[in-house]
Length: 242
Image (cartoon, rainbow, N blue to C red):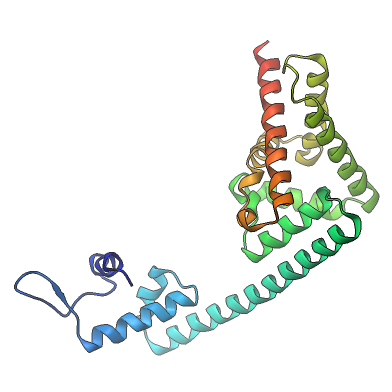
């Protein structure tokens, strides 16, 4: 514990000192220390300070109910962590066997990490309705369609990489913009705001939580994808300005 944290707990009323010295220093009793241990224990299992404050002021039944919910949440997290580990192991095996890395491997890891964090990374870019629409689209798409879409994205990405040196007004580059819009438009299903959210997500893909701990090859892939997305947005802006 830092002095700054103790002071913060005091100012928020979570842990008030029993008394103050003549010089204004905080004085804590054994009871205060026991309360601090409770706070740290509850924080350790993932409760917010607001939840902890409620726990320290409610009755036994409410405390048991909250702890039970937290136990269930931690159990779910343990299962999700196991899923992430399995996904990473599968990716490692794929790398060892093929010595290549493609979009499918990356997507699987992103999905697994998102599941572990109990949040979809796209949450910050899409509304609940748009997320639901995307999930339905992915579930209903036939395997062959998914494969075809993946190959189209892979080919487009390679072509963008090959043309990053070109002027964004170039006709070849503008063709890449058309292909990009066709693919994002297919996912967005005519929703312009949805498509804009997808583009923002692609432009920040190298900031996916947990990516900093991923293998170098994955981080390089994410950085390259962000560069491609930024290139397409510059080309699109040049088209609209013209």
